[in-house]
Length: 485
Image (cartoon, rainbow, N blue to C red):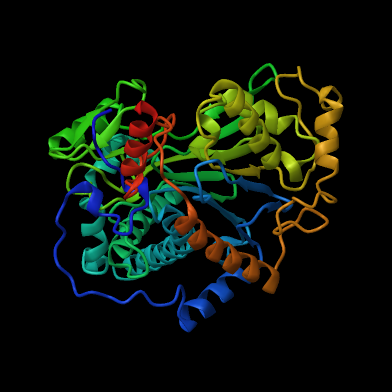
């Protein structure tokens, strides 16, 4: 494994383990977690009707996240109905943070990215209207936006010109909006003063559903999978995104082109990681991410892969989940579990609980990863349950699991974000829960004891190595000498 250190060791200065000297900037005093203006903005954001980010459900979606065994839950999620004041539009996303401040980065992207996407969508639509009115002003209206898109050539490599011209107008508009929003979001993180994103970042798999169209933007190794019916009526999975990991030939080629290194450790040969040119760190297990600016000059990018799908009556639901789910469950198993849930409101929770059991069974010596799931149902007006593969009807679910789901309301361990009906709280209850969550995150960072090397966690985003504890070696040495005597 070598003697490399990790950004995830949660040292006081996250950039120091890398041995890189950052440009000197004026020192900023760490102020309060939120200023009064930030608090007011968050309060307004969390009170928006139809915007859900805690465990719970609505008529169109089910959400659930659970902390793993690695410390603070660094996953975040969101479902936003009536997105952009459009009654037929829903935004969904899951975000998997990593590094010392990964939980903060994930929540920041969760809150800010949808707003930026909506703003860019409106700007592009307005520009199109202006171009129709004044066709002779082509190029002068959106010159800055054009340069932003052309700078992100990597995202267009998979779609040639002829194919692009055949795409529907909504895809073209949302594609450009995604590109701009993701770039602006990453730029904002670089300048953000509340926490350091030099060695911290997050994935993001997001989608916009407008009418019968799905448009997806993906960065990192979280995944979106569609549950749909084949010609024989069986429910089957269709993977909508690609896990953007360093083992993909195109991703590895780009990283090496910019002098980054890609290789796997002997202890986990199946996990390719990104390393700095002259340091055995940070060992990032993805090829694209928000943040992680220590690697942005060495091939890591935040440009999303963008795709679209026209929905039909055979398409039933979409599952967005972080890699804590996909590392232990196949696409088929995920679709089966969601379809077999006793109720749609509990589908996301059923999937997370199944993943936790799979972690303990398949990898008993590894730490269970954080899990976050969003299940978006495409026939929102119906609460009918489908059966996966026509082999797992509702009646065959074990009585024990049925009891677990039925007791969600009475279980004192049920997250605060769920009320008696399984729906998300609104108003001050949500706000208090979010603030409490932030305080607990900060406390857990300072309390975690990184005193022993327990082995490299399987498919961990960043390589986890022990933190040096002064005096511990001296104690061990004296104990050894005493035994010899």
